[in-house]
Length: 571
Image (cartoon, rainbow, N blue to C red; front, side):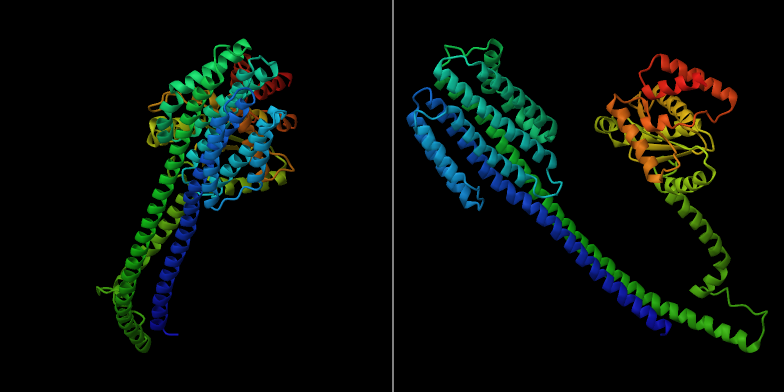
């Protein structure tokens, strides 16, 4: 195949690649759009389920109160509302197995004067839990990240509303009977505690928009009075004689209606976010198609123009080469003064070699260096660890790994911005780099996590080094935030180790350090028991580090370093 044919074939392949790119973009958009549309569709169904749950909660409360006082007309009206909402729910296509049969059986039981009030209440509760479970399944059906925080918060809000509904029914029943049952008081204590926890989890998970919108309803007068009444009952162990069942019902229902308004707003907010994300995805796809087509057309025209120019330049170069070959004049050279591409190639040949070498070096540097901090990156660490692990398997020498990350780094980013977080990462990297030995390998593992590989040191030296770095960081002043602390995990090389298991143990120790309060050094118990002992540093440096470690041990609860200090004193 001639060069001309190859170039034309290359152009055809480029055009084909452009169409494949468009196809994959469309497929990606379709997948994402389908997931977002699932969220939107499910939110509408969850809204219907939420309304059905709300009405069933009212029916449960009125049915329970009816066991102790007369509220037959209100109960009949509520059942009518419930049936109307359940009919609308059936129109969404959702089928809850046994819903109608179970509800009918509960209503028949409620009509009997001999029916067990707890059995009726629990029957309604189980039915409601089925609806709540279905809502939870629908809100988490799609794996898209759209409104994920509000979806989680919504689940907690539904549970909080259900526990308050159970409280409404229980208190209403006991007020009607005008008695103080200790088992009921204990049940109220549990319901109140779970309700408070679910509200707390809702506020933690909710997005700022949802949290702001729910602030007023959650602190409203109705909720405050309802919760105060429950608190008083729990505190005194008695139901107030002056509080009538219908008065309690009206108060608690108004409070639950407040929660229902927050629940409705939450669903509306999730639906809005899903629709917005779908619009952004559609716009991105359209923009991608336009850009791809534009770039493809420009590439085709450029390839055509380049082909014509290149073939003409090659013709001139070939003519010169043939002349040299025929004349056997080896002192002749290819023309290097011409302004075409062949002349430029002749003049720049050696320069291109120099540039190529420089580019290769730069490529290697960029591939193994963290762009933000300028230290080694994870890829480079993998190469070095493989080399060192192979060496340790041969010579049986010690090696240790220190993994640490910045405590509460997400909080720093949230409060001061990501630019401040970047400055802290750079400052910390510079600080540690100045303090370690040239034989140590320091890299950024990812995010706010770093790794220090001590190539020829056992766990004693690694623990001392980690504590030294921890103290150094704790004493330093960082841009904007001032003080920053880090948590450390230490692991040493075992002969049956793999590169993965070594890193995993250090990572586990790091998480233990965080779980125990952060700003400390931890190593796995197994590592300490098998630690070869000895600190691989010059004697004076070892003495200084031993004194520093002993002073730190006297004022610390870090069990791992305490054992290290004790072991060194024994030896």
